[in-house]
Length: 193
Image (cartoon, rainbow, N blue to C red; front, side, top):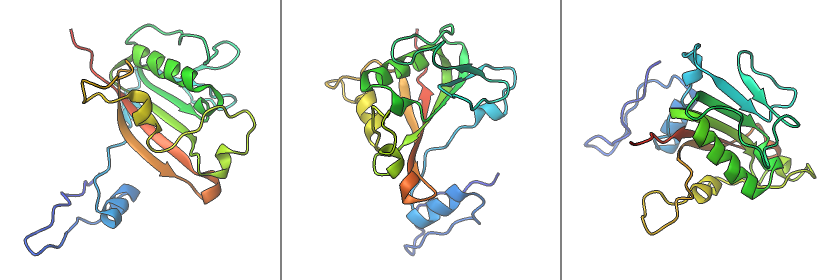
């Protein structure tokens, strides 16, 4: 797939782009911003292991599902070996658990993910009606929620919360203002040693 060239202005102050091929190309041109790449590794690594957390009745073929009551996100460890999973997804589950449990799940995901493995999360954005229409929601999310949860990994005076994930793709999306969601992808920070 063609990639857009740099968004640096040319000598005359104008930006010139390749023909846009994806929605993200259009956004880069419209917003004049670079976006983190959304990794789709699971499209290419059929021999690797992938899991879905809290999927309910939504199942992904070839993926393992961990959901209540067999797995309780509030209290249980993910029943997988350390460094054994290439990709994890969770859709509309983290908003149903407490903020402390969200940290617990992120720590567990980092534990079971392989280096450079991905965790893809979709949760309602707090400004959308979806975030307020379910009485079972316990946690709300905004665009900077993940930075707060992960802590400041670049400032040694700040707590990094011990979560070995790097924030990658992070964007608010929606088909209408009522159903805004936060689409986020984390990448497992490589282990050293």
